[in-house]
Structures are given as structure tokens and as C-alpha cells.
Image (cartoon, rainbow, N blue to C red; front, side, top):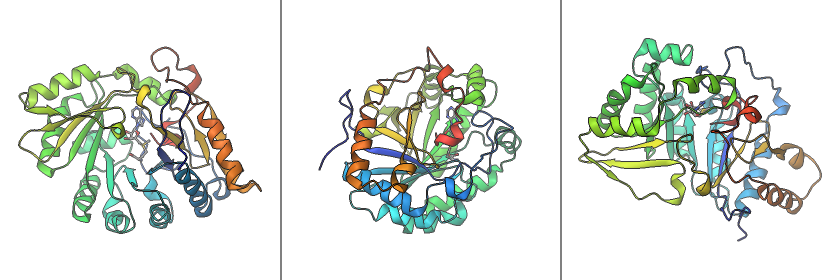
Length: 331
Ligand code: SAM
């Protein structure tokens, strides 16, 4: 089978597929307060578009499709999308990234239709603080979502917490205890300077090193480094001794993880984004809605992948990504 190898010899086998720009939460570091997605139904990839695009990528060696958004559970037909994707030859892994608010309703159906694992974003366990960060969210609904995911059979279940100094950094320890109690994994994430909301939030940056110090102190060094696999992406992971949980830090800013980057992103409007930290994109929606054959589209994709930049420039230049909204590119 042909593979998608870029000019830095990285194999691209993972797509983060955003299925909607809409979200029921408005996390202040993710989306500008006044930003409202501007998209009509026909602007968004249809089931047929998604199926064709994923099938073409699968024939090029992609095996993992993460469903993200916006909030993917707001997309009408999300269960059908999961089913279509997981039935495509070559697709072996269909994880979901969600804020969890609607997961109680969907977890079982999604698992039955191919979603094997889930990442839940939860930045605070304190209801008032959670409500402030998300501009309206309800942490109790998210906890019900986690419980439903556990019951559904999805595995592993990971909690993602964006750590922000003076906002929620005093919850690192309680979040670890919560994850251990539930038997799920926890990942702490550094804030990334994407869009004006993200750029503003990086003033509250909390570094990988500081997070790891706190983790070690809290767990009294009872953590064992896990050998990272190629699919771990940017996370440094540890097994928490005498528990079913793991802890990790995703440090997009402190550590450059780009040399092992194996992913590209597709927005709800069908733009293929080659790197989170660069503006380049091509329209796959236009391609699949034109009279191009699958082979012609494959050629287009191979050419685009060849232009994937070597690395993001979060530490030196963020001007070229200041217009992006993380909520539009799926995290
Ligand atoms: N709504 C879903 C969710 O909450 O997971 C999927 C989309 S959301 C954009 C995906 C992830 O991106 C979330 O874990 C969120 O915390 C993270 N994210 C958004 N903006 C970020 C930023 N500026 N820095 C780091 N992570 C960010």
C-alpha cells in the first residue's frame, strides 16, 4: 500500500477530522467571545464527502481518524459518521475528542459504531470555575459523560486539562486524584498560541517542567515512564504505580515534537491543514465536489503533504496563525 511520507521522512497516518465548527462551550482560551461560526449546511462536508475523503486517505495508509470539532457531538448524524468511517477498509482507530457535555447520551451508540476510545476536555472540577472557563458549561454533565464512557467499553478514556497559571493550576493534584479514582488517564496540556484567544491565554502559560514537578511531588515519584510509541504524538506519559491510570504532559510549546508529527487536520469545511502552526491549506471539499477522479485527488494530497512544514513556529512567530480559531481546526 502506498504511504504518505513527507519530505522530512515523516509518515502521515493520522487525521484529526473536525465535523462541525459549532460548540456548546466557549472556552476562553479556545474561541474569541464574539466569534460565531459562519457556515451554511452546504459549506460543511457531507456524509458522502467525508466517506470519500477518508477512503482516499485510507488507501494512502491513514489508519486513525479522530472525530473532533467544535463539539463533534453537536453534529447531526455523528453516530452515522462514526459508522461510515469505522467501516472503511484500513481504518483501525476512531477516537473522539469531546467536551463530554452530551456524552452520556451518545457514548454507548458511538462505541457500538466504532468509536473505540475518547479524550474528554475538563479544565476544572470546581463547578463555578468550570462554568467561567467554558463560559456556561456544567462540570456535572461532563462527569456523567465520563461515567457513561466507562460503562460503554471505550478504552482508554483520557481527560485533557489545559493548565493555566492563576486560573486552574491549583487543581493539578485534585485532577490526578480524580483520574485515579475513576481509573482513567490524565493529560495536562500547555496552552498554545492559536488565534487571539489562545495568544492571550499564553500569558498564563504553565510549563511542562513545572507541571511535571507538581505531578512528581504529588505522587511522591511513584510514576514510571512509559516508552513512547510513534502514535503517542506530543505526550510524555507515565504509569501511575498501583493504579489503572497514566499521567502525561502535552507540551506543544516547551518541547518541539514536530519531528515525530504524523498528523494532518481536516476542518468541517473540508480544508486540509498541514500544520497547526502554519496557515497553509487546500480545499478537499472543492476537490471531491469537482469531477476529479480518486487518483487525481490522491495526487493532490501527496503534493500537499510534500509541503508540510518541518515545524511550527509557536516560539518565534505567531503572526501567521493569529487569525485562526482553535475551535475551527479541532485542537
Ligand atoms: N470540543 C472538543 C473538546 O472539547 O475536546 C473538541 C475540540 S477542542 C478545540 C480540542 C482540544 O483543544 C481541547 O482539549 C481543548 O482544550 C484544546 N485547546 C483549545 N484551544 C487550545 C489552546 N489555545 N491551547 C491548548 N489547547 C487548546
